[in-house]
Amino acid sequence: MPPFALLNIGSPRVDLRRGGAYYRRMRLQHLLAASLQLTLSSFLFAEEKPNLLVILTDDQRYDAMGFMGHPFLKTPTLDRIAKEGVHFKNAVVTTSLCSPSRASILTGLYAHNHGVVDNYNPFSDELIFFPKYLQDAGYETAFVGKWHMGGEIDYPQPGFDHWVAFKGQGVYFADPAEAKVKGRYVPQVSRDGLNVNGERVPQEGYITDVLTDYATDWLVDRDGEKPWMLYLSHKAVHADFLPANRHAYSYEDESYEKPVTWFEQPEMFRDVPLWVQNQRNSRHGEEFAYYTNLDITTYYKRYCETIRAIDDSTGAVLKVLEDEGELDNTVILFMADNGFLFGERGLIDKRNAYDASVRIPMLLRYPNCVQGGQVLTEVVANIDVAPTMLDFAGVEIPSYMDGKSMKPLVTGEATGWRDYLLYEYYWERNYPHTPTTHAVLGERFKYIRYHGVWDIDELFDLDKDPEERINLINDPQYAGTVKELNQRLFDLLEETKGTEMRIMRDRGTKFLHRKSGGEREAPFPDWFYREPDTPVN
Ligand SMILES: [Ca+2]
Image (cartoon, rainbow, N blue to C red; front, side, top):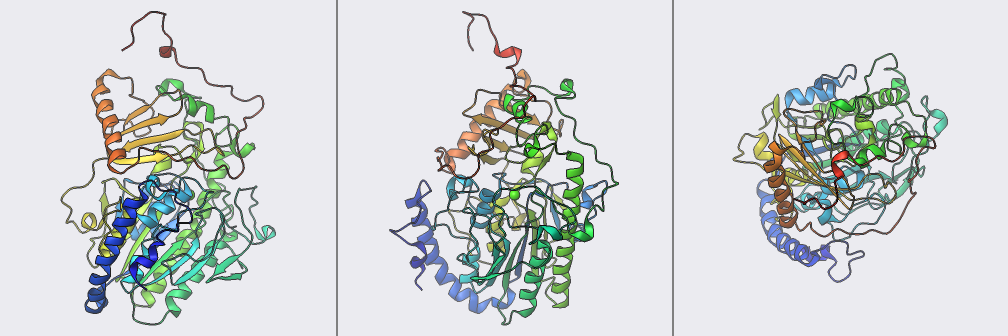
């Protein structure tokens, strides 16, 4: 098949992306050049190519791993990978929401370039997922698990030789009666079972274990000498958290201290945006979480219990690789698609630019050329995954990708890295309490700008204030930093063609309600008010 056949020129199903002509041209150039290079390299260097394993979890916080000093969660396999590989301490996502982040991982693009800005609307069939380039380079590729892009679809996608997926959020248990822990209604839940290479197959068992079996079966049963890439994408640990029955209530007696919020101790905070105060009484706030009387402490324990099966799964996959003699020749990347808040600022869920939302666990193991036990502080992100995987495979990284290869970082060859990363989240009518957000994320400073709301922007000095309590946006000592980072934000947006925002069709349930008798609308702070006829700076 000629490379340009991949592009569907002239008949895009949905042309979602601005600058489409530019990306089409860049892709075409890349594909033509790469096909020549790969024809040679796949013959000459096939035996040297490592296998690639991406393990993706859902909504797992950066600190939800035992080695992070967690008071009770045990993750022996993740601890092992951190010890034998690299822990990216400042790994983040460029959009803290399932589908947009998943699209960024697979394409190496910001959400404003891949066009997936919500969990409901279809995506452009011009998108090229990085496994396609690996396939072209002689890799055998497999997808197992949660796809959750373009709404509730689970049919095979380009770039994968083997395919196991479920629609939307799927379910932890095919039959709710099997579960020891009972859940509540979750949007986009599907009980249609699995799509296995185009065939409908019932889900038999707990989803994390089912996916693990599909993944390890493929690793064991596959034949041929090709290097491989496996993308194991868990449903866990997305809400509603239903642990495997063997882990149900195992942390029930542990204690968890909910984060202190402005509502309990306002003196510990400065200039909390109005939208944050208002979200407290919303579906994604502590006061009216999921429109229930949810106990966040109990909820957090179920979350940790649900993570235990992910650790079991990772251990099972490593064991199979070890038995097959392929463990040390496999680049293993473990990560999540975004974080999750458990009461920080009075909120639950993700979407916002605060640490619990944007930071993710990220571990990489590849003892052939990556020294174990490293803890790196550079700001790396979901958009870096595709370039990194292609780099390890010796495949040319397309110049249109927004991310950068992390390989030089982990092998100690880096000669410079980004100082700030762009963050973006686009307001959803379904969840109207979180505004459109842009931010620049650095190792020390985080600057957040809200768009389309009459509210307060934010600046945090993470060295001095890791819990992001003291908003420095009005502090005269930081006026220069605010100005510089505001300019930086717009530079990053302009450089990556992100200054025009898309408006998507309304789809899905609208969660716009507040709890009757709950917190009322937040007042503007005193410094918003002024006397008539006073000068404005
Ligand atoms: Ca997610």
